Amino acid sequence: MADPDREMLSCREGFRTIWLAQNGDVRIIDQRKLPHDYVIANLETWQDGCLAISDMLVRGAPLIGATAAYSLYLAARSGGRAEFDRASAALAESRPTAVNLRWAIDRVSRRASACSDAELTASTLSEAGAICDEDVDISLAIGRHGLELIRSIAAAKAGEPVNVLTHCNAGALATLNYGTATAPVYLAHDENIPVHVWVDETRPRNQGSQLTAYELAHNGVPHTLIVDNAGGHLMQHGMVDLVITGTDRTTRSGDVANKIGTYLKALAARDNAVPFYVALPSTTIDWTIDDGVRDIPIEERDPAEVTDVYGVSGEDRRTVRTIGSRTPALNFAFDVTPARLVTGLITERGIAPASREGLAALFPERADGTQANA
Ligand code: MRU
Image (cartoon, rainbow, N blue to C red; front, side, top):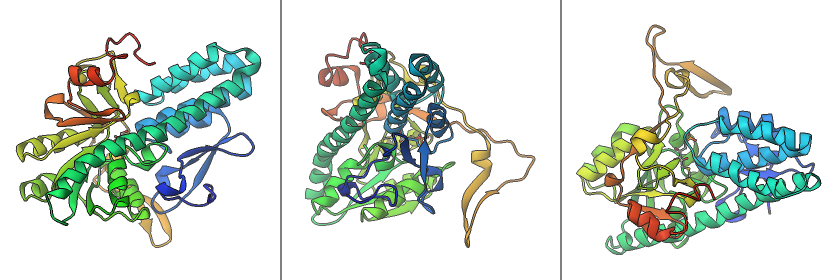
C-alpha cells in the first residue's frame, strides 16, 4: 500500500481519511488546504482532535464521528478516565448538527465503562479502529444498493452517461473511504457504466468545488463543476437523471439535514420529477426525533466564511474578502429537507422510503428510539 502520509490515494488503494501513526498519534488530511495542497496534520492530544473538528480540518458526518472516537483514545492515553471524561464533554460541543459525533462518543464511552483502567487506552483505540473499519464496509454496502439505481437508469439510456447531481462533499473525504453519496458513483464507474457527476460548488466553504471535484478527478470519474444556482436549470432541461446527497442527521421519520442549499435542490428535483435520493449510514439516524425542521440543531458559522474566499494566486495561498466592509453576512451551515421531498434513503441495509415505517422496516431493533445511539 502506498504511504498515506504522502499522497491522496484512490479509493481502490485502501485510502483512509484518518489513521494511526507509528508513534501512536493520529493523522488526518487537513481538508482546508485541498485541492491546492495535500497536507497531513498530526493529532497528538484530544484537544488537537477537537480543534480539527471545530475548525473543519476534518468534516463530513462519519469522519467527524471517527475523529471524535480517536480523540477519546488520545485523551485516555494522556490522562486516563478523568481526561477521557473532560474530552467527551468538550468533543460533544465541537459541532452541533452531525449526530455521528454524539453516536461515536457514546459508543466509545460504553466500551470505556466496560473495561479496567489499565485497559482504557487499548480499548478506546480498538473501538475507534472498529468504527473506522465498519464505516468502510457501510459505505461499500450503500454503494452496492445505490448502484442498482444507476444501473437501471443506465439501462434506459443506451450508452449515454447517467448524470448524477450532488451537493457538498459526501464523498470519500467525508467518510473513511468511498463516501456515501459518491459510493454508488465509484462502483458504477468501476463497472464501466458511463456516469457523470454535476458537482455543486457548495458555497460558502466550497466542499463541492474543493473536495468532491478533487476526489472525483483523483479517481478518474467524469464530472463538471456548476454554481449552486445551476441545478434547477439543468433539471428543467433533462440534464440530471438523479440527485444523490449525503446527510448529517436524519430523523426517524426521514427528514434530512444536510449542507445548506440541499433543500432547494430537493424542491427543484420535485418540480422536475427528478429522483432525489439521500445516502446515509445508519449512524446518521437520530432515532429520538421526528421533526427535522423543529428539532435538528442547525450550526451557524462565522460570517467570514461567506464574505471571504480562499484560493491560490500564483504560488501564494490567500483568503480574500469579496464584499464591502459595511455589509453583514449570515451563515447557516445546514438546512433540512422534509421527508416528503426525498424519493428514498440509501442505507447500508437497502433503500428505504423516507418515512418512519420505511426506516423501521430496515432497522427494527432501533425503531422504538430506546436504543437511540447504540
Ligand atoms: O460542514 P460539513 O463539510 O461537515 O458538511 C458535510 C455535509 O453536509 C455532508 O453532505 C454530510 O456530512 C454527509 S457526509 C457523508
